[in-house]
Every structure is written in structure tokens, then in C-alpha cells.
Length: 179
Ligand SMILES: CC(C)(COP(=O)(O)OP(=O)(O)OC[C@H]1O[C@@H](n2cnc3c(N)ncnc32)[C@H](O)[C@@H]1OP(=O)(O)O)[C@@H](O)C(=O)NCCC(=O)NCCS
Image (cartoon, rainbow, N blue to C red; front, side):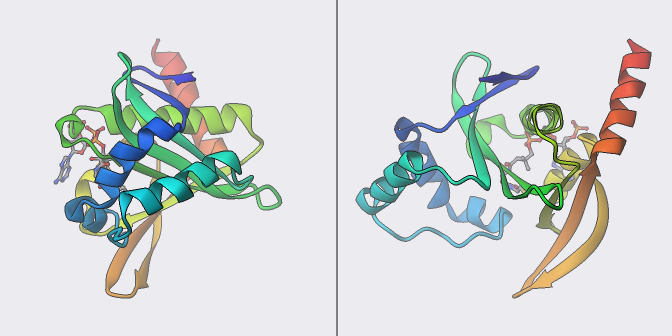
């Protein structure tokens, strides 16, 4: 369990499958994430979910995002972990709309970034988000990510953002100085 200021991150469990299926079959969430809408049945989903939990990938770490009082509100991940190049991609989704725009995204991303830079040797975390998703861009900017380019894929325009360990250390130094 990784505890932040407003959220805690924990490993995924089979009991999360109901929420995750609901969020992955939600067309608004799929659009915001430029993800394909899931069309398989819950039974099929549950069976592949269980097998992913049994055989976790070494290049992807998934966490459930919970409020401090234990409500499952979303997920975050770091994936495509490349130890040679020292980088990984970050993804987040607050699936429960009641928790949007209340600082949970910033807190979960900050908590995950701190964990990655403190517990691994990775030096760069990057992500992509739709150019139209200004809320996500604002959230990532508040966590220290800066834009470094764009990407056109299919009919989507993405903004690419990154955070290097060096910048993260500088930002933490400034925060410590303010305390
Ligand atoms: C994107 C997401 C992670 C952000 O988390 P969140 O908890 O809603 O956001 P936060 O409250 O931590 O921060 C969002 C900031 O953007 C601002 N914001 C909200 N809507 C905005 C908009 N349309 N344009 C610009 N800024 C906006 C908020 O005011 C807030 O800034 P503030 O703290 O200075 O007021 C979350 O909303 C989410 O998962 N949404 C659904 C899926 C999604 O968009 N996924 C894309 C991930 S790449």
C-alpha cells in the first residue's frame, strides 16, 4: 500500500473487476482516454482479469486508486518499463465521476511518481493524453510533467508529456525549502 495525501494506491484484486468492467465499457471514459470501448461479456472479462492477476507482467505495474477511507475510485499504472533506457509510461483513470476535479488525480499521480523515483532506478516517466483533454493536461502539469511534443495517431492528436528524475528532485527541493 502506498499512501498519499488524499489517495492510497494498492495492488489490483479480483474484486476490482466489477468497477473496472463498468469503467471500460463507459463510452465517455473510453473517449477521454482514446481507448477502444470494451465489448466482451463480464464473464470473459473476469476470466482474463483473473489470469492477469495470476501471471503479472514484469513490465507493467497496476494499482487501484482508493480514497483514504478505502473507496475504489480509479486505477493508475506504469508500463512499458524499460530498465535499459530507464523509462516507463504512466496512465491514470479516475473512473468514478464524483471524484473528478477534487484533487484526487493530482494526488494519485504525485504519489505514483514519488514511488517510482524513490523505489526504482527509472529516470524518466512519460505519458500521452488527448490534446482536447485539458483537465488531464492541467493535472499532469500540476504534478511536474512538461509537454515535449505531439503525436497524431489514427484520428487522434495527443500531447506528449514527461518528467525526469532531475526535475522531480529540483521540484522536491523547492517544496522542502518552502516548508
Ligand atoms: C484526468 C484525471 C486523471 C484528472 O484527475 P482529477 O482528480 O479529475 O483532477 P484534479 O482535480 O486532480 O486536477 C485537475 C485540474 O484541472 C482543472 N480542470 C478541470 N477541468 C478542466 C478543463 N476543462 N480545462 C482546464 N482545466 C480543467 C481543475 O480545476 C484542476 O485544477 P485546479 O486544482 O488548479 O483547480 C481524471 O479527471 C480522469 O481520470 N478523468 C477521466 C479519464 C481521463 O480523462 N483519462 C485521461 C488520462 S490521460
